Image (cartoon, rainbow, N blue to C red; front, side):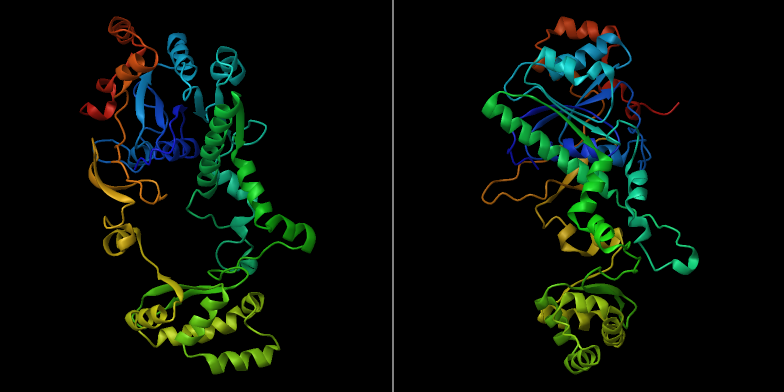
Length: 416
């Protein structure tokens, strides 16, 4: 859903999650993102999940709202085309987003061709060595905070399923490119930006106080199951077998929970026994097991509908646990009544709902969302529009196998 907030042209050469998601974020804010594809597809063009046709739901979801040009990147002529696309003239052009370290896309060489070029390279580690979300997360300490207390089981780590550091890195990269483009507009300066996935994760340990907790208080944070660290919140089972998550972080949320569950007398007794007011979120955290026992007993005696009515009446912060199937079927936030979603038909995929940017600009219309292209779908248009190549020159590039159109997309050809 293009809000037309960014009038930029960005050349993206990428794989995995962080860089493609950064490009998608910029595209959904209005940027013209040209995705460089290898002829026949790159290393994640067929990544799971896939449709029976072979088209990847992963790839097509991350490459909505972009244009595709297919180039043989193994050949010098193909690499020169990419360099030309990156450094092409235009006050809103001259921007490269990549997570592929290549000597032939060296930022210094690109800056020699266009002094105000902006390059953003996403790396694994700051020294340029390889890392992905899963290896970075293993080093953060979070797998030892995830799941139940396992000290008696040898303390085996538990990974979580969300690639959180990739996501955070993508948004950092998108913000950095937008900021660099704004500075270039004001000063004429280009920028060579480098962003390490590991640095995104480790700086977040600082921002959230986790690193200081170890350094100054001398202990690692333990695994506490589904409790919320530092306040009160946990999952609970209802009388009809449903499971809900309750969060009482603010004082108003806490008061609403106590009122909903009619626990005023029990909480006063607990406070007297502890000698602390549970108006303090730290005290609620320390007493989390005792509070959870009271709330859990109340929930176990009531079906979900009765609990929901009481919680809604008292503005409790809560929500049911759902599978993704349940979410899409029953939660209006994931339905087409929410304008962040719209129906889409992606070639090789079919009809499905797709999400645009979560950003809402008041009184500004959302443009129609563009599905992911086939490989090379926009090759000829991009070469003519950006590099001003005539049809004869484009034809020679096709004849030489340096570029290709959608006819070379393997998901368009029947399996052998």
